[in-house]
Length: 395
Image 1 (tube, rainbow, N blue to C red):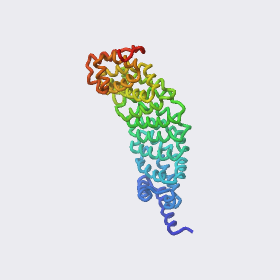
Image 2 (tube, one colour):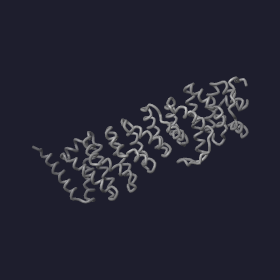
Image 3 (tube, one colour):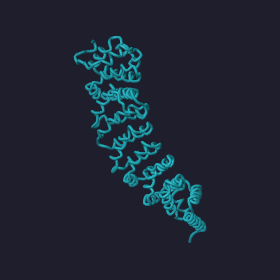
Image 4 (cartoon, rainbow, N blue to C red):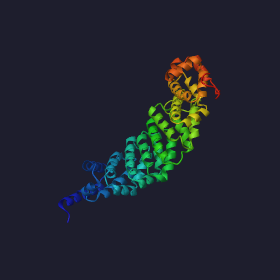
C-alpha cells in the first residue's frame, strides 16, 4: 500500500499533467516555471519519487510541445531549461533514451538550423546536445546520423554559437570511430572559415583526432599553414604544436616545403577573416620562421631537410623585411641555428650580409633588425642560393 506521501505526490503529478493537457501556451509556461522551481538539479531517483513515476510522461509532453512550437510561439528557452532537468539528472540514461525515441535530438538539430531561433536558444540547445553526446557512443552516432556534423559546421561559420558548437564537435570526435573520418575532414574544412577562438578549439581537437589516425590526410597542409596568419598568438602556438605532431607523418615533406615557401610570401588577394593584404602574409612569414626554428632545433634531420629546401636564403629574405620587425626577429633567430649547425650556411650568410652586419647578427640576432637600413635590406631581399659546401666560416 502506498504511503500518504506517495499518494500526495501522485495526486500532484496527475493534476499537473491534467492541467498541462487542458492548458494553452501561457498555462504550460506557468506549469514549467513551477516545475523548474521545485525540481531543478534533482537526480533521476528524486524526480521519479517526486513525480510519482510520471516523469517520463512529462518529458514526452515537453518534447512534443517543443517540436511543434519552437519556430513560432516564443517558449523555446523555457522548454530547453525544463528538458535540461531531465537530461542532466544523474543516472539519467532512461530519460536520454526516451528523449531520443520521442524525436528530441532531431528537434534540437532542427533548432540549430532554424533562422527564426535566437542565438541564445541555439546555445542552450547545443549544451543539451553536448550532454547527450557525452553520455556515450550510441548517442554520438545518432547525432552524426542525423547530419549533426554538417549542422555544427554551419553553426561555427554562420552564427555566434561557435564555441558551444566546437565543444560538441570535440565531444563527437571521441569514442566515435564510425564517424571519426567525417569529423576529421570537417575540422580541416573549418580551419580557415571560423573566428580565432573557434579556430583554437578546432586545432586542439584536430590534434586529438590526429593521434588516433594512422596518417594525416594531405588536405590538412594548406589550411594548417594558413592558420599561421592569425594575429592571435595562442592560435599560432597551437598550429605549431600540430605541425610538430605531423612532422613524422605522410605530409611531412609538404609541410616542410610549405613553411620554407612562406618565408617569401606572394601577395594574396583572398580576404581573411582577421586581416587582409600584406600584414597577414607578414604575420604568416614570422610564424613560419618560428616554426622552422623549433623543428630544426628539435631534430638534426629536419635541419638537413630545411637546408636542402633552401631555408637559409629564404630566411635571409625574411630578415630583410623592414615592414614587419617580428618577421625579421624570428628569421634571424632561425638563421642563428642554421649558421651554428652548418659551415656552408654560415659562409653563405656571412657573404650576403657582409662583415659588419654579420658581426652584429652573431652578437645579437634578435636585434639585427635595428641595424637594418634600406641598402642592407635590399641585399638580403635579393640574395640567391649559392652555398658551396667547400666554403668554411673563414670566407
